Amino acid sequence: MEEAAELDGAGPLRTFVQVIVPLARPGIVTVLVLNVIGLWNSTLLVMVIAPGEDERTLPVALLHLYGTMQYSSDWGGMFAGIAILVFPMIVLYLWCGRRIVEGMTAGIGK
Image (cartoon, rainbow, N blue to C red; front, side, top):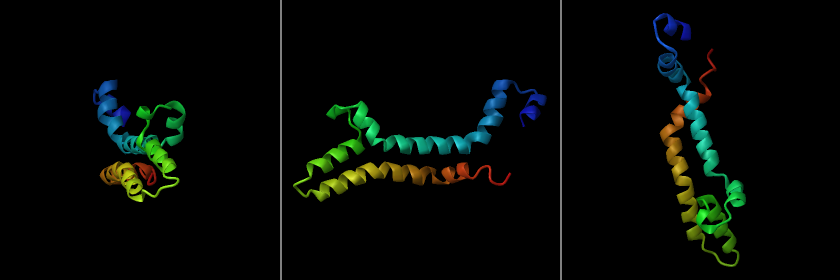
């Protein structure tokens, strides 16, 4: 397809933007979404790098909340924290779920 675009007179930039990127879009979206989900859940990395309370992410704050609940039972607060933590990932998957599956199965039929 690159050679066909070159024969039609497209330069390297136009070939990349109009031919290569549309072909690679499902894979790029899949990698982007899976990386966002992985970074969202990176609890250990944040615990090591950002020790301050004001620098914590939501998973680390929820883990800290669970640690402070050792002798109390604030399960309503814990469930609210879990819902706040999981809700963006569910919305992201519902929004991009079809594209994730397309990106993972893009090369199967060839």
